[in-house]
Length: 123
Length: 108
Image 1 (cartoon, rainbow over the protein chains, first blue to last red):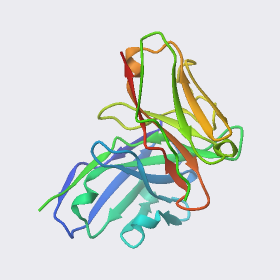
Image 2 (image 1 turned 90 degrees about the vertical axis):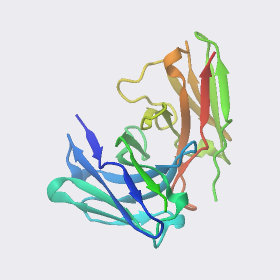
Image 3 (image 1 turned 180 degrees about the vertical axis):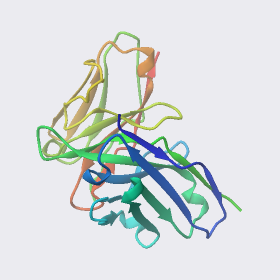
Image 4 (image 1 turned 90 degrees about the horizontal axis):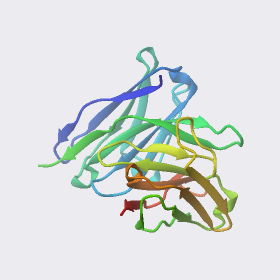
């Protein structure tokens, strides 16, 4: 069965960086894009960016351009999201999600999500 | 940039029908996806491409999309349906993936 298992909670100081991992199993890792979405406590879902695990191509939300880097290690079917220059407002749960094509039309959607990784930024 | 608007909350009695809307300019021309999120859990896809259901999602969950409003309909609502629901679309004009602000469904 498809699973995305993320790394554990992190506590970081302002200005530091954090790297969250997302290990895929149950499918061919390089066949589906991985997206990253975050959620601050009590808030909604915020899309951060995507990565094609086959090519390594990425696309980032404007808000995170210059601060986020998405990479992968295909030998261990793992995607990574690194966010730098952390500030208190980056405190959130970070999710990875697999993107798959819709069956009827040319759309795509997020069918499986990781369990989430809490990143706390505090001095 | 494109904006998705959801009501903050919807309340319904058990056994009744809940309708959660997602408004956007000409959203009927886009494919809309819906996620259910229970407290402390990751989102779960319940409806995709306006009206399709992933395997394992009950037939009680359905969707429609026309004009400026997409709707998630949950019939015969159960206590276990209490959750936050988010709509999502892909839009080429800005950051491609957009989420609505979410709707908290309360089962009375």
